[in-house]
Image 1 (cartoon, rainbow, N blue to C red):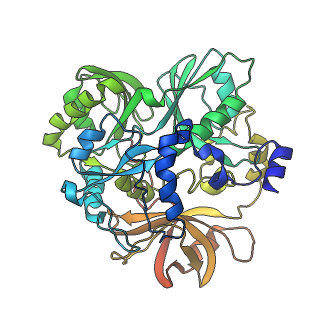
Image 2 (tube, helix red, strand yellow):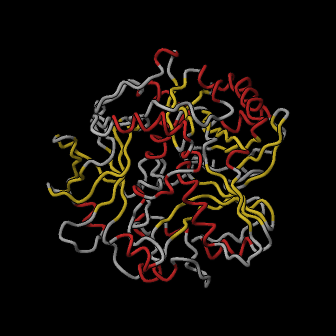
Length: 458
């Protein structure tokens, strides 16, 4: 039925990501890799589905230029789209492992130190696994204006967050577009979405347009310098103007760090002051060494993706595949600000958004804190109860080290199917069901951490 509807409509009419062939890339067809991996995946079919379960076979596979350095620093790696990515950093190489459990796992204190370093000092994340596409040609702006929801007619050196929608107004993806020149943009999207997003973009670019799409993922390493002391660190290694006045939020430019010329973009997925540094791969090790040598005086700490996850959930930042999907639209996700509905400019999904704008919300994304449950853990998928009745499920969860309790995101809707209103949202008693234990939870309509986003613009 789903395939038939896809053929008739020209696009999937529901979220089919779990069975989408675009979950994979060409390198996943490597015979040797398949030989080693298939034996493990089949054997795990009925195994215990531990949270954070990582596959062990056919690894390491894709490696960042920093892989060996980070391994020697105690990184415990996870795998995403074949990339080896640091999940956390252990005190010793022997402890760089996950002891699986449904409660708090062994890495939580170490990840907590990384989390706090980012909130209070400065942390360095290796985000090389980002998917990176170059969109170039004199028709690039016009083509992108039709493909994405936000306005990309911005000055050179500006980054724009946007969704890429389907005709129903749901999210096919979300990403940032940085204008590098009048006829050139850099698109940065999630690690797992390389094949999916490239395919969607390629199909949406008119064949007769002067617009070319190039996958440059493997050409650049990405080092994210994040935290209130990020500016101090970068000023110590570069002559560029890193001040708030000289380098505002969402601005991007080339700067020199050590022997390398890199692209620095002031943007954040953790809710703190910071820059993402896009470094040609052959210069990545040198830039990392320069940052770490200078970073000692600022308390610079390596940080992994578990810390990144807890930081972004405290800040209420959405993730595609969790809070955003082809069945989710910007109004219920709280992202209408990133849609150019105030301009008479057609884009894919606009007609549906205009209709949805005038309709009452049936569900809404909110954030919960399990205050007082500092010894518990949420993983995602747990039921959300309001006055004893199920009204939704947790989409993302982590332990919020700044808040001192588990933090969760999820969509809620009325159990009687009527539209939402603020009185209903804020008037109930909420709980989260953790294996039969009902944890009291506080609902937040805005992020519980820095809801005004003052820190990222400081």
